[in-house]
Length: 459
Image 1 (cartoon, one colour):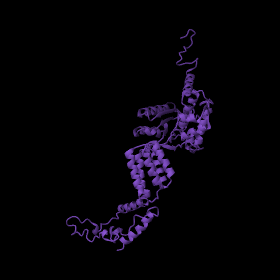
Image 2 (spheres, rainbow, N blue to C red):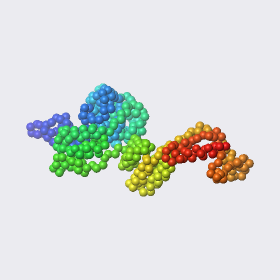
Image 3 (cartoon, rainbow, N blue to C red):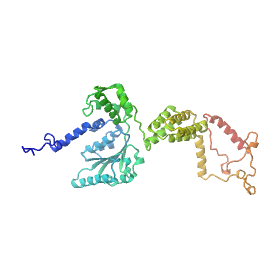
Image 4 (cartoon, rainbow, N blue to C red):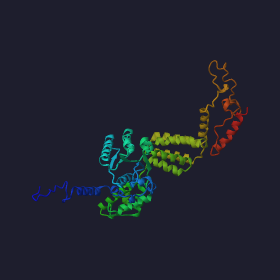
């Protein structure tokens, strides 16, 4: 205690006579000043939010939630850097609700139950508002961990705002889905990212006008961000630090290229992107758009997709959508699969690209798959019947007494190698399954099939 009876200035708790609350505020300001640019520039009000107009229109569920007019729990689903955490914090600020945040990467059932118990005591003690519980990466919670939330969400002890980069219909338990609104956030547009970059350049929370950004550098940042605001601001901050440390004040294209040289590739190998991109890849090949097909192939290769998975899909596609219109397509696809297995990546990308180009530019026919599926449908419906006696196995003793193989006509004895004979069961005589299209090699095959059927069925 000082001689004048004042409080000792130990520098740890108090600063120049500030009260404790003021010290906390000063500490938060210092922490904020040292936080990454993307954190400092996080919107503090709904008016500062950029993008997600489809969710924030007047009267929409999310806008009413942010403005305090709704008490529904939500699952925010979308790629990184689109504002999930920001929206969660705005929800908590709407009516001064208590905000608790945790990440599924580090929290478990114990931590979840502790927050729920505290929220329940708070409600019972003073009738306060529900606690907003924000859980990031909720898809990483196990089923047991997700089940621990159900009762509190059902009773509105907590207002759950969960964020996930994976499709919740694959990764979140059904009971929790049924108790929550599922809202999908979209990647930010280039204009949205540009707006955020320019705001960060001038805003006092950001770079406060300390640097300028060349137009070409801004375009490059926007392109590399690929709709991810966090990535754009992180790259801008890194480039700004490099410039200022060298005594400069303008970030040019060369500076941006030196700190980040590869665009973000949105791709999760176990979720939506895995299925969506391969679906688009196959549909582009089916639609004969070779350029789009190569684009989707590049996205998968760049994201580290299993090349064997891509090769398998090419093999399937060669029969499903090309078939006999170009019989060599299957050979190319199988060869690409073998090449990938043999040489691996990154060289395997060449074989995959060659197969992709071949299949995309090949004439298309789905006659193979429609033929086998039609035959399967008949079999499953019971349209089978007995194998004609003359086609049955006649190699074992006693088969002749059963009439097996009697009257079978050997096609190679005919001048053209084709002769009239019944091959299907009686119930299926005259049924056509394979119907060649008029594309590629199937045009000639269609004419041949007509002649073959005429001869075979001319009994």
